[in-house]
Length: 483
Image 1 (tube, rainbow, N blue to C red):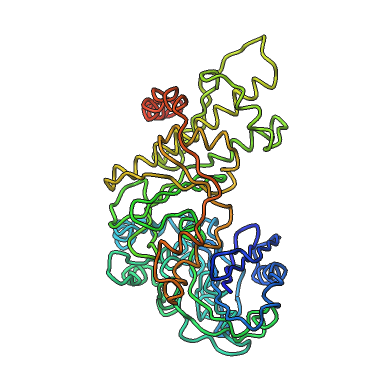
Image 2: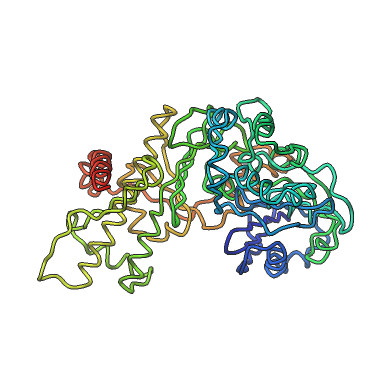
């Protein structure tokens, strides 16, 4: 049995698959607060019963969790302070380090340091709590902490700890090297002890046989434990980004677009992860795009399952056009707020039709923004994606996905909003359970729906598609003049 534990910000999902890729059981449990004991409790509650029934089977287990979140622990792996989460910022510390030469050089190597980077937060913690920092034996990503909680018996010292390349990236990894290594210059300049960092390993590498009492309590004792990855990388793999040139769009409160590439090209809108199967994952992230659509539904008291019914009745051209904010890619200008264009009053239309005009405009605007950023990656890396993988909570609308396919002008494949299959891919390859990536795709990375462009919609929005980048640029100028 193959066990994949996905520890997110709000919930944990534990999935169990058999070797043929069939999902045997999937359980979910909410996380009330960001606390290690709460994570342990949530995992215990989410552990599928099938694990206890299959005690005579060989079990392979791996984990993914949030990128950039970390714990400071003692020599026995016990947390010394609450976790430092990926969304926390330390602007004061960032202002102290942003001009350092190693920080600038690291950005040229594809790893951007900003106020929320783990190195920034770690620097701030050391400055404010030097005694805490001195007591710390290991600084470990959340994924790594959970894996070694399975491995090491309680009360035994944590030695020879390793973390995977994807989780190590934001801690200052030099990913231009053939075998990634920490960029030691940044640790020297920030006066951080690199010996507190785990050693490095690829995703899917064998770590241990689970021997802790906790692993026994949850039915994973003596399981093979394998290096995991970040949730962002897991999401990309689970959405089919397995081969060079493949692209996925994760749609949630924000939108994250990832492309598998062979090379790293520095660009202000693009950041990178190491692809677990080789090469890189080039990524761009929007501002809170999808959040505006859910906010609008809440404002109008519209249930999400009613949105399609309202939107599909709107005549092409009647929608109000939504333009997302420019606080993230491609402008990184917080002065560019979200906008609605073409707002006009019609006294003879129903309330439902007016709401539909807003909602359809949001879908069109989001799809145009996604298309713009997909093209940015394609132009940068001189590739053309034949199809786009879609996942996340924002791809539940059939109408929206048809609009996406038509505006993208290519086939889209909808993947389940479960990323647990992603971390299993390198495990299956490294254990030689599968020798062929295409066979893994066929068995484990299966879309739930394939949608092709609607020719009439493709034609109807072609002019708007071509004008979109100019509209966004003009709004940038307008908002800057309002300051």
